[in-house]
Length: 343
Image (cartoon, helix red, strand yellow):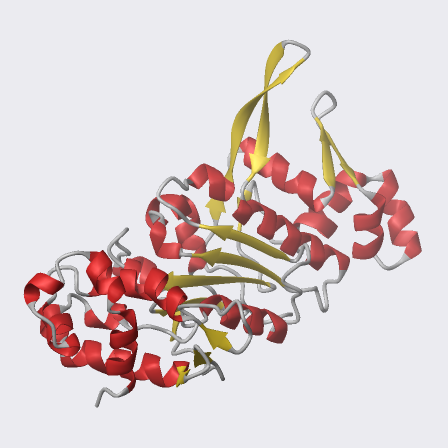
């Protein structure tokens, strides 16, 4: 069965983590724009309900009704199961992609799903977690299994059933005894048992983490150890600044400047700048204006937020000439030249 990845890509801002995710998806043979790739972004208000699913009110003909909306994890899980039923030998791989995983409260968002992250050698989760009835029925529905509550019956879509049972005679027999097939041919391959689930081996979970945002929500060691981690340095670009200076040389020297003045910077590792911090509007050049508006503000507000002495020394100006960001922005050309020639 398809191998999986459970990995967090981490590094500073602008190093190309999202670009690296696309490369990994390509190697997994997953089209990032297909239904086999479910994407989400964690943020401070993102919850377990967003991740697994939640009931939301809707108004229909003047009446308020409630509908259960599956979350991103449940969508990815159902798609993985469905692909296994369609082809149990070589099921198509599925990936859940989480951008900015540390910008949400991961422990609260994953909830009981947390224990599913431990995987056996065969790729299935080591342990199970039990779903609520509404989660379970929604999962089955997205796989292609309808539940008729009034009759306590399950109706399996012909497309799913045909593809999960290759023999025509077996398919016809299954149509006459759906519950038997439901248990033996459907639940068994996808490892569902009494409304409890596992993550299947054709489901990968990929995430990105900006280390400069590391303090937004704390990740405990128990959560961290269930992932593979990869530090991303970023790929160089053949780009100039105003068609004059080499952009990558500028970034390399800027990071050297940060390291040399690390006593003035908190969490120096998190403040390293990537080559993709600014994505050029022009294919071959980044403008001084773009650097002034985006990069210089980051340096002013996040890197040297406490002490501007290092910037004053670099620019060779007096302290009263660098009190406001406006004054720093006026020094943009001087700053670029100083960093280009920094040793």
